[in-house]
Length: 240
Length: 212
Image (cartoon, rainbow over all chains, first blue to last red; front, side):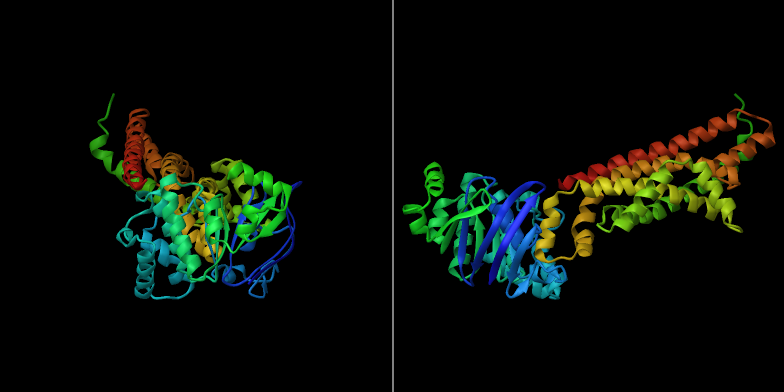
């Protein structure tokens, strides 16, 4: 579904991603772990071109997103993204946050969009907040709404950029629960996270990155219990 | 102090105040559209648009309004005075408003742009739906300030003969041979206008910040 080929990304002289090659297949849950500054968020942001790769290709459902002639907006509709800082639109109500994309981009009429948004709100357990504004919500609630907003576009893949890192500890669980439910329903997901327990439970594959490179890829069971690389071992010994 | 001219001449001050307000209001509206266009040009990736906007803003802010007014009025033949005044002041104001808008847009969290674009919203829709409405919160107070500046600076259009408050004050001085007191009246009116507007803006800002 997503093919990453010879991907490089530099910020000035700093090479953040060094020759990444990877394929993500439909229905797969891939979790990317690694120390801060390892390039994992940058890699994720290259997948929908929020960061433009310095060289290399990102091919999504057969379309080379890195081709300058491609209309990236059309493909971004099919790639949902959830951010660490939620990035809800503060001047729009919860319902407006969720229905904006479907109404403006998918051409849904308002009634239909609201009906779908309410179904999503039920699935994230926040139907009672439909008319609230983001500043009236807790961090966990904001992130659940952000997930609903991304899902409203009916994406083929969901990208999560440290979705629980900005949350108070007691709110992490409610967001992870929703992500687990998504994974169980067969959503293709790429998740950058520090939640190792979650990675163990949900991931099909875990990618360990360090210094802009993929150090090790394996099933969570293998990667966490019998890491092959020394760098993986030393990282895991610090975080587990 | 001799204010004996007021019963006979108060209508001059009233109609002058009317013109001053009309001129300032029209200028704010046109300056807003011009400023918005310039701000978007200046922040765009297109180098030609960007350099046009930058040169315009620098040039207008670096030359006196009086010269800009003369250039418009004497440079374009058969232009009615009021039109020339509105055009010159709008040209001038657009440069300042552009900077206000640019700063207001710059203060919107980067994550808003990223969230909107990652949904698939094109640049234009992102600005219209997400960035501009939030930037307005930063922009409106500064824009109110600009409106106050405009009311004061509009006195300059009296030199091309627009019957604004300043011009009519001079008329009263000429007709009555009273040099000083009409100026006191005019200053008082300008102050009431700007002070009232600034109080109104404060109230407006307070109401807008309720949602924060």
